[in-house]
Image 1 (cartoon, rainbow, N blue to C red):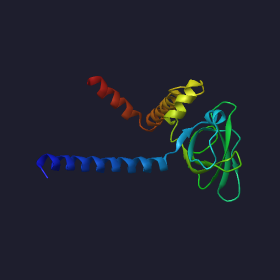
Image 2: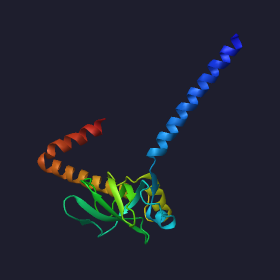
Image 3: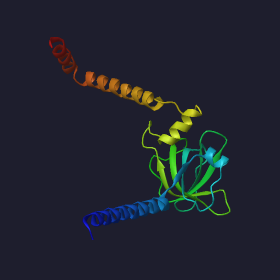
Length: 185
């Protein structure tokens, strides 16, 4: 074998190895992909039963029904007339409640319109919302940027004012000393 042939054999072997690695990664991803849907999406294009998806939206008001054991049924809505009934068996997150953002992962049971979730994720504070859900709710005019931040800022200001009142009642001399220091600086 000449030098040129050896070099071509090494390059061909490397390309074959890279191609095999890419195909294995693509196969692994295709097995674990869970597409994200909202109730309006499911109304337009239904998903085949036993297909793993993520369903996101808001927990419907008055829809939470606790069954026996740790089984809970609730509806996920996107603010429109579309709602998807969800059945979950397990411990719900502490922040799970009606009217809050939620992302569930699972599949539709065969022969029913009930989404059987094996994972439920609730939003973690007033301003969190999954990007896809937030974008769709904003486009429908149901969720406005900064609503949670305003309420949070007002709450923080109220706590600060209460803290200052309490400080003034406990030791008025300290507050006056603090003002003198600020004035001299």
